[in-house]
Length: 238
Ligand SMILES: Nc1ncnc2c1ncn2[C@@H]1O[C@H](COP(=O)(O)OP(=O)(O)OP(=O)(O)O)[C@@H](O)[C@H]1O
Image 1 (cartoon, rainbow, N blue to C red):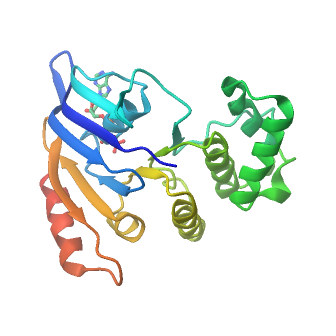
Image 2: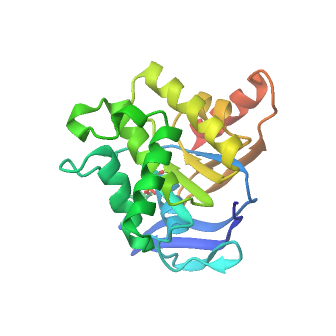
Image 3: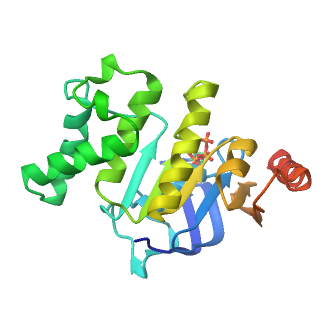
């Protein structure tokens, strides 16, 4: 299951700071979109609006046609920093996140173990964050988001803190998960190559205030150097 997301006529202002203006974006159900842009252009702001952590100054955000009024289990979020509870095991961290769904304990446990297995961490379920590598901790964070069975997955530079090899593995895992689950994905990154290798579509945000500078489909198959240089030009002009 997946939900489409729509952002219409968005503006975000903090006092005199105009972060986003006149931004419209539609994420079809089941699509995988990468959001690129220079630091400070409003990528996290946009993602946080969809997550329901923030409200726009103007405009509206809907998921599955319903206005977003706050965070909800149908919209899972994964950040660069895993924010795991150090005193809970991997399984405990995932189970804890399921509490707000009001699921009975055995169901929380079943889902936590299934999600950890899905991200390749079945063997690490009983370990504490300090006993896990950065890549493994990020798998726990991903399992925590997936266990709630979200229809939209919002990822804010989730692999930014990982070494190159771990990052490549996580990218492969994410592509597999997306293909299997068909979840709508919005993926914020600084990295053009990461965006082009993961997503079906790349949206570039930039300028002051931030707005959409480019919105391109990523063709399947080998990397397209022209698309890459077009995006690089837009990023340079942000
Ligand atoms: N609560 C706030 N009050 C004032 N300014 C804010 C607030 N939140 C964000 N901003 C400003 O909004 C702009 C966009 O921030 P945002 O974090 O969305 O950018 P970003 O593109 O995600 O950046 P990065 O790539 O560095 O994470 C920044 O200039 C930031 O300083």
